Image (cartoon, rainbow, N blue to C red; front, side, top):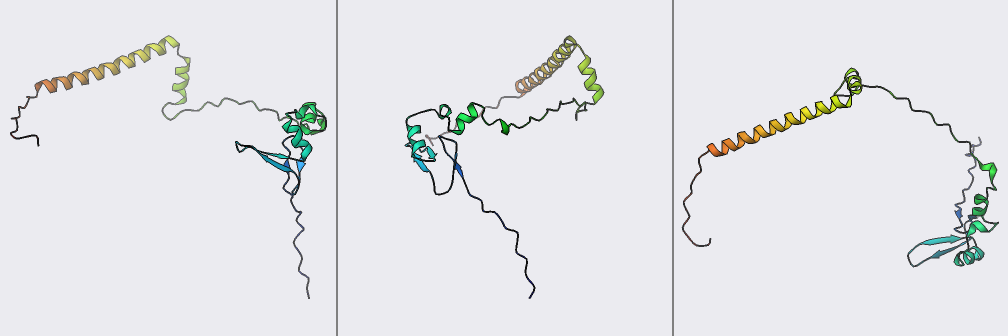
Length: 156
C-alpha cells in the first residue's frame, strides 16, 4: 500500500506573558495575577516579584530585572540600525480649479496685490448682498397690507 505523506510538523506555540515587575517571560501554568479594586490586573512571575511590587521598589534599580538591563544599556546586541529617512521632493501639480500656470502666477504676486484683490472681491460680495436686501425691502413696501377681520367667538 502506498504511504500517505504526513504534513510537515508544526511547532507548538506557548502563549507567554510578561511579568509586570521583572519583565521576564511567564509560561503557562506559572505566575500569579493581582487584581486591584479599580480593576487593574498585574501579572507576576513569582511571589518575590509580587512582594517587591507591593513594597513599591523600582525594578530599574534591581540588577536582575529586564528593566534594569534596558535602563543601563546592557543588551547592546539588540540594537537595530535605523532606516535612513528619504527626503520628500515637492511635486508641482495643477489643482482641479486652477492650472499650474495660474498657481505659479499667484505665487509670484506680491502680498499687497493679493490683499488688494481679496478686498475688491469682498467689496463686490457686500455690494451684491446689499442690493439683494434693498430689492427685498422695496418689494415688501410695495405690497399692500391685507387687513383681516377679527373672528367672532370664544377662546376656541
